[in-house]
Image 1 (cartoon, rainbow over the protein chains, first blue to last red):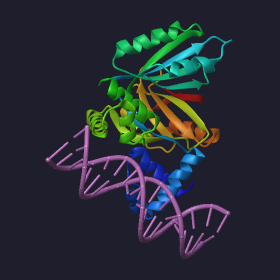
Image 2 (image 1 turned 45 degrees about the horizontal axis):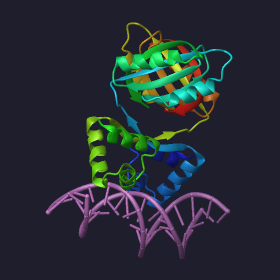
Image 3 (image 1 turned 180 degrees about the vertical axis):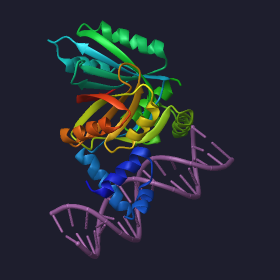
Image 4 (image 1 turned 90 degrees about the horizontal axis):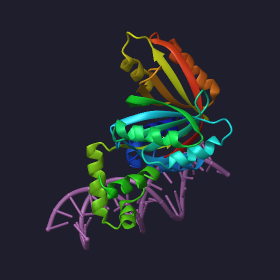
Length: 137
Length: 137
DNA sequence: TATGAAAGACTAACTAA
DNA sequence: TTAGTTAGTCTTTCATA
């Protein structure tokens, strides 16, 4: 992981469809070098996947969930990851155990998700925070 | 935004490099249809960008930041988005104003980021939570 | 939807460190 | 032995009808 790797990652984060030839020109290396490095970065797991950033709805929110002390947090999280409109499920340290990052059509839909979370028998409490603005690093 | 759009988004979220021809076969439509729809989804802003999910470090964390009441939260957020290792900067509702999602080499580096956040004159308080496990929705 | 042209990615053989 | 390069081939995308 040197400077070239870092620059490749930067370019791909901004636009993962940038042609290897273009990245190569920019960094002053050959197309093959870029390709080899991207392959390696994928094998190493540094690049987890090629994906899209979407905004399907108008409201993003963090729904923080705390679960009962005697249950498997992992199970609950796995179940929630399958719900529509859920982008990430994080198990976190701190007061609350799970954070759902959701992207929903409107606040009504967010509310339905909160309700659904609260309906899970392992869930004892939730706390929701709207994401008012997002900026990518 | 119909069922076909949703399925295209699902495929691309999993692997944004899936060829249009393959998506087309899977959904029973033509390659041109997939391409046109992806183009439209990008123009509409539903697809914000093609990107990569990376894990450059071993530790992910949420650093929650509260800023003084009289400052422009937006400015502070913008500045932090430029820091290395910061994946997202969210302005959120609730007790704390900004959430940084970071991906760092180790806890030492996370700590340096926290320190750096606390050094900003607008920042009055921070609270950090480690992301112990991540699952994509 | 189908097709040919253009662009990009991949294979493999070669070179250099 | 590993990383980089290059030329030729194959795949995907794009434009047009």
